[in-house]
Image (cartoon, rainbow, N blue to C red; front, side, top):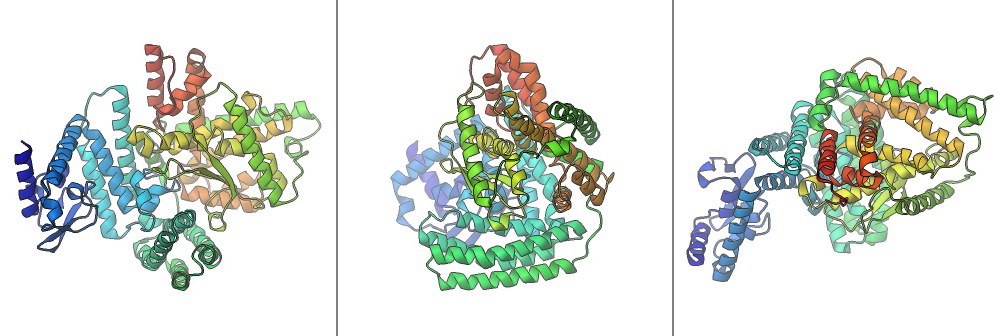
Length: 637
């Protein structure tokens, strides 16, 4: 049998057919005149002796992806090698029959990770999966040429069509739903919303995050860092040229934000990158020369941006907002219902604040009380020290409570936000390790001095809980270590931000916060989140303008500058701001229903252990646990 199998493999090599590609993507007869198997597999002949398969994840029977195959290399005629490869192919074929969904998922994650590696690596681009293979392409900017984008869309549509209807067990049903949802969300963003046509900030973020990926891996070998950085720098000019060619009538507000971001980008490449080259690469003159060309490219891009025709409106309408909620996030509540819940929560929180402030000092307004006795902070250095101590204390506190199971090996660093990220991130933000780099630590970024130091200090416990313990850091750590590849590589903003917002309220409930004025700070944060959900719906359905929205935020005590900066961000991220309130709302509802019967620890373990899945499926997992009487569940199952 092995001899016959080896013979077939031998003949396939001589005839330049690739059994692995056939088994994964179809028969040779599916190969058309353009060299396509399905919509996404291209073969290109370099010579009679050399063929390359560009996108087959298995790399032509074991050959490294992207490497020409020499059909006369004696290596391929070694009977032992041929037999081994045939056995591997047989095992892959058997696995495919046993669980075709995993193969579809792998093709999906691998395809996007190769062609859109920067967006798949960063949590900034929440409409794409966190593809594990993206970690292998730190020096490649995303393919956003019109031809490339159309190929991406058709490839994902083809893969979506391969997902069959089936009656699965609960966990398989969730995997199928989650994969469909991720693919449909990608198609909505690229084919329907067409963000690559109307969002200029997309083309600024990608080179910035790509460069930061290289700079943040300064522990890598020097030659590798030099090669990766040089490669990124060499691609920026053509990438920005493609951006201008792609953009079609972006909104005025997106142009304004993009112009400001370009200045931040130029400052980054003018100051931070050369410093890195001097320190890490010994002032390599060739790499430094690339910086000058990059700065010229950014300047041209800025000039081209202001000349683009733009439209006044940025709204997507109620149907567009409902599409994001239903298609991308699997959330059944329509925008009208979200708005009603947010408005009710706003009124209730206002009343809580009034009652609580009256207990502290009945003679004063809550706005006067809230920052009456702030921590004594005089410098950004002291702010960083305060946050580092708070993260340590929170970790000790939650580890000592029987609230949830914590994954082993998690680590987080508290660092000052890099200058180029200041326009992209809030005062506090979290950067998770790349999927596939499970040993790396998370990073909690703080921007001290961006606003009043005392206000930053007053919010410290809640910001730390939101971003680290038990918020984003713990949730991300569980995700990147998940044994299920689908749950490991798919995120949901609704679940992600909902959990982090819920994490803040645990501080008061578990007694971590004792100072009444700090509890008043948390109520103000809840009020702010409620208002953001309201404005998210009202802004994108045209019920309110940017100036009125900024004025309402200013009414909560934020400066006019901060209020304007917030609403500009809201305008470019439809549907995201409501995730904080609505996600925590759904978690709180589930806890009221199940926690008393399961216990707090098991409830949280099941909630987090299933991955970032739709809340209605979380409910089914909780019900299944009760039905089976499961005594315990690890957060990584």
